[in-house]
Amino acid sequence: MDERKNNYSKGVLSERKMESQLNLLYTAGKGVLNGVFGKKMPPDLLLAEFFRSNRQCGSRDRALISGCIYSLLRCWGFLRHLLPLEWRKSVEHGEVLFSKRELGILFYIGCYSDRPDAPELHTFASVYNFPPLPRPAPKTSAARVQKAANAFQIACTITQDMLLPEWLQERIPDAQAVSEMLSRRPPLWIRIHKEQELCLKEFQEKSLRCELSEKIPGAAALYAPGINLFSLESYSKGRFEVQDLASQAIGAVCAARPGERILDACAGAGGKTLQLGAMMKNKGTIIAGDIRANKLEELRRRAVRAGLFNIRTRPHEGKLWRDFVLCDRVLLDVPCTGSGVWRRNPGMQWSFTPEKLAEHVKLQKEILENFCTAVKPGGYLIYSTCSLFPEENELQIRDFLERHDEFVLKEGRHPLTCQFTDGCFRFNAADGDCDYMFACIMEKSAR
Image (tube, rainbow, N blue to C red; front, side, top):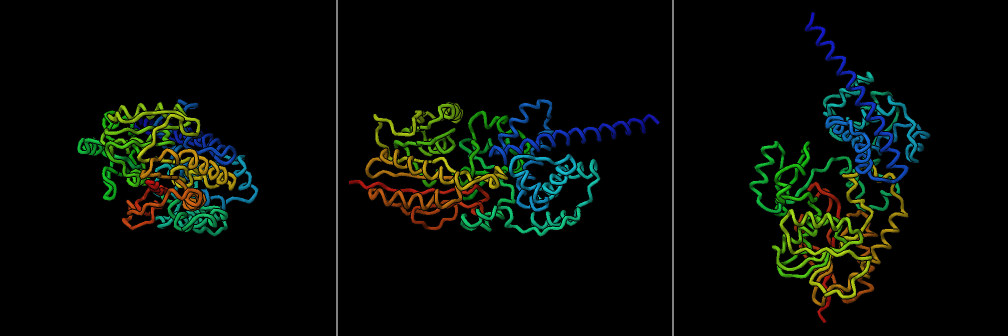
């Protein structure tokens, strides 16, 4: 009798816990959707603010909330077609009016589409008595959403290209391939800076699945880490940095050498700066500039942890300093639309506008003009973005070269595909399960 009472009590608590988690998820989901569509903010910042304001969320709560919201946003291009037109317009104007059950249906189908083995599917089915979904799940996310819609008797036709708005499909090269990659979760890429054996040993001890890249030395993919990487001894001792494979490939394009003088004019928190510093083996100088002094402060801390002492930070106001000494290489990792990292911030394509693209193209042109004079004769100018749009990439460079005949593209091998290029490099997700990025390298005449 006592054993049955204890089991019953545990069951009730479990049910209450599930309902409590779903209540938190509902609140977080409404806030994030309102923020993504209404305020055009990325979901990672919105989730971070929600967790700061809700300290009662434990690690399991955070995992469930983050997982469900990212799954919903990753599949939003499909899920929006399950809604009546009025509801769809309301959400995409930043006003979520769903009940808990209605939003729960979207989370349920979103999780099934993104992660068909997600444990929270049982939670939704148990609390809301949702219909079971097909097992084994279909291979593609579009097919999974279609099956789920059929289970809820929602009349619709789901196709893979729905993950991109129609107007973007016309503006992005290889839009079908991009749409397919948007439905897949990317791994977390790191760059192992030193003591690789110790780093890999710690990953193994923590049961972290780690795969070294055959394309970029030191690059490694971590899959579903489930722990805070920044708490690891290998991180505190500067053995690795978090950096996407495509970003590391841009570092390879830069080809920094020991003893050189290099300017990283849009350094930010310094992912590429640190990579270049390591390539230079602490010999020579990197001037890391940015208009955001707080980002440069973060870069200083990261450089100390990595044991790099050839990096000098220097804030600027968007222009070259008057007393500046010309450099062997100048990297302009310019502000851009960020469309190339939509896989990591899913849903942002639905709040993107052509006006944002035009604003970034104008700013990039100004940065090119303001900093190209920092390259010494015979030196190199490297331009990079994390953008899918030709206007920010090849077309921007074509326009620049028409105005500056002292620069020419420098031919080279693509770091991820090994194909020969004219000096412009597109890094696609299919090249190595990475972000979409672009880089080009231009040589300045020695005359």
